[in-house]
Image 1 (cartoon, rainbow, N blue to C red):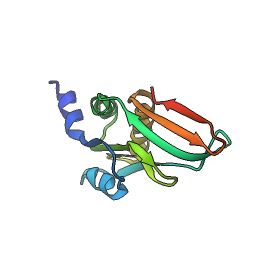
Image 2 (cartoon, rainbow, N blue to C red; image 1 turned 90 degrees about the horizontal axis):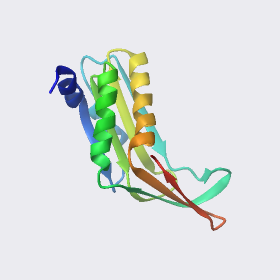
Image 3 (cartoon, rainbow, N blue to C red; image 1 turned 90 degrees about the vertical axis):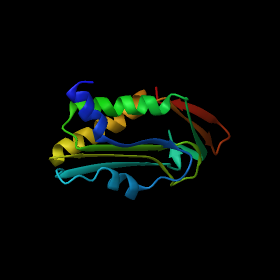
Image 4 (cartoon, rainbow, N blue to C red; image 1 turned 45 degrees about the vertical axis):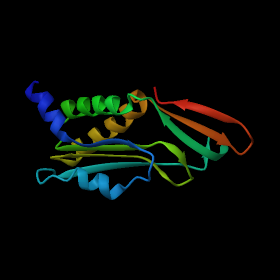
Length: 148
């Protein structure tokens, strides 16, 4: 394992998929580091509408390789930014409006790096990690939204 790979691996403090409620406090605590001058955190919540349609129900499901893919995304972010720590948790199962669906965080020596790393983490997670959203709308329609 290269030095960069080892550093990327130790920067990942939390990488999980859960069927239980998520905690912002847990994710924030996971990225705490005395050398970090900035922590950026993103919280994705279930909203009551999508594409101008009222959402009645929402469920997330994931491929069995989901945690491996999540870790690969996080390793790449850790290799590309001067992160001290990264954390990401995503919920699966049936969620209610307002529930936390995903929480990610990055801590870095400076705030700009933390913002950039956090944004990259959530964007790559949504684009590459095999998690699917099934929405049921108030008008009786439904749709599947694939993360990748």
